[in-house]
Image 1: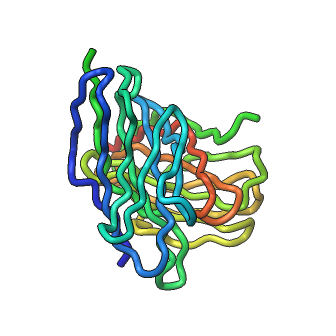
Image 2: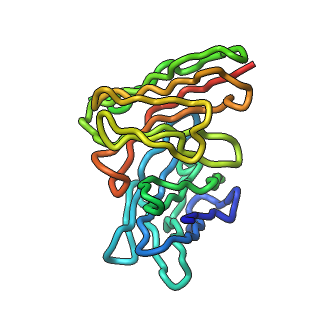
Length: 115
Length: 113
């Protein structure tokens, strides 16, 4: 079965420092991978996606993600964190197995950026 | 564009009651889906639809029904509410199948007592 894992429940980083939120995946075939962000009491917002092409994907709010096929990872990164980046981040993978077509989400990582 | 709208924002039900969560989008999106979000479990897909008249089950469909009579609307029905259905429910839509960015509604917080 297709799956995605976010190994860290929470990531803490000081403002101005680089941040990384980790995601690993398990899919058959070529993966479609996504990152979404959820601010308190809001729905999810799309950040970026990888379907094909350049392994470094740039997205909204200065975020980027690196697709690594050999390590089956799709980590979210930002060179300099802001306090306003504090939110819940979800990695997701497209599941096209068993005549279905849907997104499978990870359990989420809470990012806390301290001033 | 209002995007994806959901009503109500909050709801409290007693065990055994039924209700419908409303979802509408004004972006002419073909693909719509319902998720529930529970602490430590991320988002789990309940039902989805790839177009008017077509629906299919997700990971956790039991206790829920859906229909898609128009492109715009995708209501979620709880047939007989149970405390295990206490959750935050999100509706989402995208232009086509999931290769495209999904747009999420603001959510409905449901408590079943």
